[in-house]
Structures are given as structure tokens and as C-alpha cells.
Length: 498
Ligand code: AHR
Image 1 (cartoon, rainbow, N blue to C red):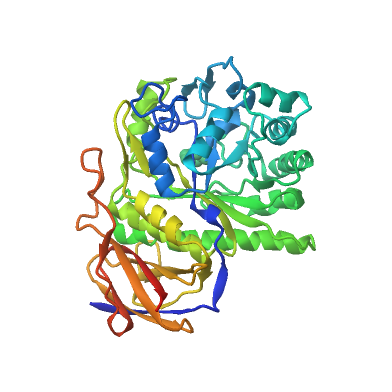
Image 2 (cartoon, rainbow, N blue to C red):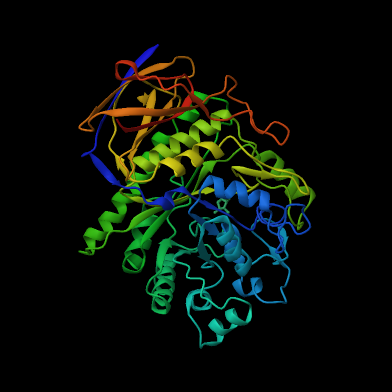
């Protein structure tokens, strides 16, 4: 058994946790929409074709915001195609599929209400520009009395949608993106679009595209140059980050959050350097609006693209997640919470079928993948103030990372005084006795200890065996101020005032 320690003090605050860090993402891609959230004729579908079984899983997951409609898809998208009665089918060049547009803007807003979430809407700044951007804000958020707002009413929505959070395009630095741009071109386009969108509705917030990942050759320069052009009109810079374990090196895979942490801190520093240059009082924060594990489906996707071009609802990006993926997702959530002072929005990419915590079968069931559980527990319990954890534990080097701590943890003080510790033991072979120094909290009683662990790192959940990898409550054991974190485990430990 290894030993480790964690010091928490209620006065060592990082920041209030913005609930939107537990967000997610639905793109018109593969079976996310069609046969995912929307399947008319499915036994569980409501009168609008929304799958109730999926709605139930989304509500349980507790995602406060869902980014939509893309993703790479949005850079070729005309929002007008997705409203009204006559909807054209179009080629989607991003994913080589055919988009029928039978599910669109109104349907998504309706779905959000039923799912207990709110929309984060992305505009097309790849192949379109400021005019279309301001028009979709007017269509959605202006009360009435103009052509576009009255069109929304005519299309069935008397009340404005009141969408508050808007993405200014998607991954505009990537050559794979329709209408990709240089940092300067994008910064100018984002500035003009955001300015006009905010003139229509000054209550909205905007997210500028940061780099598609920290591995991009333009990373850093991109953020600095584009932000220099649009700083005053944007509220967040986006970060996207996916990890994989293609060489089956689990120690190295579980260390990937060292990279995520550095990525977040670097982008925050660049935002602040532009702030300094501009002598601005305003702080631009971060929107980690695509994050997850993504690699299991790569080989299958290549075959699908070759064999079924221009199909609809293809089985694209259908990663089947295993237990070790859930551990990394837990570590990513811990990293988000430890950066709660700058990360104000984060979207697990994505939500249903496409690199997703929820899977469905066409005409069949819906079930939760392994990665569902850390997000669900973080969203349920991680509301309040993120506290600075001081951790002492053994460290090891992995193939790509140095001094990787065995234990990583985040702590959140709920508004009712409950203290929640989220902790991962990265060691694959040894349990760890974690000594908790909960100074200045007074007497606390351990309420519960939930552990997500499986002896097989590659264990998965399926439609037939959906509960194979599940968090389990263990008997709270807080002897001598120590808790045992089993080898390879995600832990949620809850304390209340004694
Ligand atoms: O989430 C899948 C894709 O990953 C998104 O469309 C794109 O933004 C990113 O490259």
C-alpha cells in the first residue's frame, strides 16, 4: 500500500465552479442526431420524434449546456435550411454524408428544454460571415416585429429562444475546415461577427476559436494574433483536446492530463498577454468546448467513408469506451476543476453515439458507456467553490511525461457546506492510503465513498451488459483521517458537517 496526503483549506479557493463546465456537444455527424436523439417511429419517441430513453439518460447526466450544430459540420451549414417546412437535403463535406435537415434549430431548442439543458449555438464563420451571424441571432433572440423574428414566430416559436452562448465558427485554424483562415483573417471575421451579433442582443456571450489542439503548428501565434483583432468583442477562447491510447501504454495515457493542464495554462497566459497589450480591464476566459478520449473508431471510420460515401446516419466515430477511458475522463474533469478560475465552459465531445457517453441502437435500446459516470458524478456533486488541493504522493515518469503524480484530486465546497473530493489513483497495481488534512473545516463526517474500478482496464458497457463498469458505494472508512483509494480508481468522497 502506498501513502499520500491531501491538504484542503476552505480559504484556499480557486474559484466558483461555473456549472457550464459540465456541458456537452451534439453535432450533425454520424448517428448523434438521426437515430441518436431523434428517431421518429422509435418505440420510445415522443410526438416530435425525440427518443425519451435518450432524454432520460441526458437528464441523469446533468449537462447544463449543449453545443450545436457542429463541429466541422457547421462550416458548410446554412442555418436557414434547418427551419420552416421545406428543408433541403445537402451534402455535408465535413463528414462526406447527406444532411436531410429534418432535425433543425427549433427541434434542438425543444430537445434542450426536454433534456433540462440549454443551447450553445455555433455560427458558420468558415463559408459564411457576419451578416448570416447577426441574422441567426436576430431570428433566435429578437422578440418580434422584424422579418426574421416574425419568421421564427410563424415557424411556431412565439417566444424568443434566448440563446446566450455563441461559438464564432469552429476550428478555423485547421486545413480540414471548410473556409479555414489565417489567424489574422479569422480574428477580423470573428470581431465583425461578434460585434454585430452583440448589437442585436447585448446579453449574449461569444467564444472565439482557439487552436484545434496544442499540437497545431500555429498554436500560440494563432491565439495571440486572432485575439489581438477581436479581444473586445469576445468573452471566451475555445480549446479542443482529445487523447488516445493506440499503443496500449496505459501509464502514459493516464498521464495525458499533464498536457491538458499545460494547454489550459498556456492559453490563459496568452489571453492575459493580449489583455496587457491592450491595457484592457476585461478578462477573456476559456471554453474547453471539445474534450474526450477519441481513437477507438479511427480505423472503422476510414472504411465507412470509403464504402458508404454520402449516406445519412452512418456509424461514424462510434468509440466504445473502456474502463481506462473513464479514468482519463475523471482526470480531465479534475484538471478542469483545478482550473476553474479560467475554464468557464467545457463540453465533453460528444453526447450521443459520436465519441459519446450515451449509445443507442436504431429501433433498439440506449445505454451509458463507462465515461458517462465520472461526468455524471462531477456534475451532480461538483457545484460550488473549487478549492486548491495540496497533494503529496509518489511520482513516476512515463513515455511522454515527467514526474506524474500517482494521485490527482480536486475538491469542491458545496454551498450547503458539504465537501466533495474527486480523486484518481493512477497506479495500476497499488492501493493508496490518502491522509486528508481538512484544516479549518471543523468536524466533518464522511457521508459516502463511491469507487469506479474494474479489474480489467479494457472492460466496456454494452446494450446486453450495461452495468459492467459502474461506480459502487463502499462503506465509508475514515479511520485516522485516511481513505483508501484502490489501484486504478476514480473516487468521489463526500463529507458533511458533523
Ligand atoms: O467532435 C468531432 C470533431 O472533432 C469536430 O467536428 C471537430 O470540431 C473536431 O475536430
